[in-house]
Length: 437
Figure (spheres, rainbow, N blue to C red):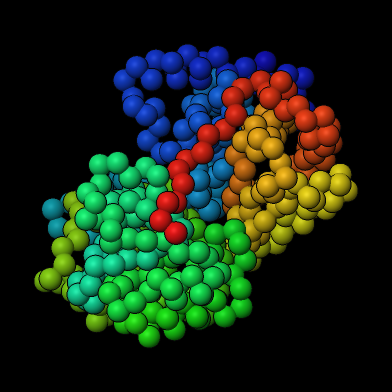
């Protein structure tokens, strides 16, 4: 019998997943299209690899095991899998067509909706992926300022100008690498030492997990204005989660440009670039940014339906409340097990991470251990808690009861200094490192 959301007697049987993975590795290099979904981001050998279906915040793997899913497709799921109002909108549009020879009215209707809710959205461009709109923002910023240098803070996709700042920079010309540099979050002195009159743009995630210090974003904006650089907010995670209008609404700091993708269409592929009219006007003639599938209507219909649900249900407030219940409860358990010098749950409530301090030896092994033990409870987890509207207080209460027992085991492993012999699968792998601070 397949495992489910309860304390199961054994770890899930994932034989079909493992067989499929072995076959896939013969022809797929690497085997995953999304790095954060790759086997290395989970404990290979004990964690499922391939999914079959999902509903709400439940997910079933190809072996029939059922899990409470805290990964939420790495962010695009904001309401819950197979959310009726969104899926109905997709089905209705599917009956009329997907991609056409002319523009579709939904392109305008989505842009009008975005214009009303995102503070800086004087003008809007639609695309398909976060990396594409990030690169479009950088390109138009360079065109507007007639400068080349870009300063980055956070993760901004796979394109050359950003990935050149990481350890996975092979294949990128040295000339491109020389034009990008990273800066430290919440450190205005670090940014001040790097920004200059050759800087075209500062692109940053307004928050990741570390809380934004009072006045920090205002300070970044002031430095950009002082040096004539454009400020770009990468709102892939903060958009429609911190507030409907994203971090710029939440913090009341309006950037020159902003980019969005995750959360806005509950899983359908779509991305937005919003910004000042005078900058965005360059897309009319001087800057090229077009894509065949920018007007694909299933994603447009999904985005419109999702945003209406996010607004009418006040989903950002719900995520704050349900996420705070989990975060506060988990930190309380960490304290009760006397593990605060080793672990903490950090981040804004809508998206938190179980963080390990430098006191933890072999953190990737401990992450794998916590993950494998959560699997026994039917919980799919990989460091993060990406909250969705589908989560209930009962789900969080169940998760905290699972954490309570697992933290007891973690303390035993820490005190014994032996973790690897308790792993069923492999330790997790790192993704890449920033190299140009």
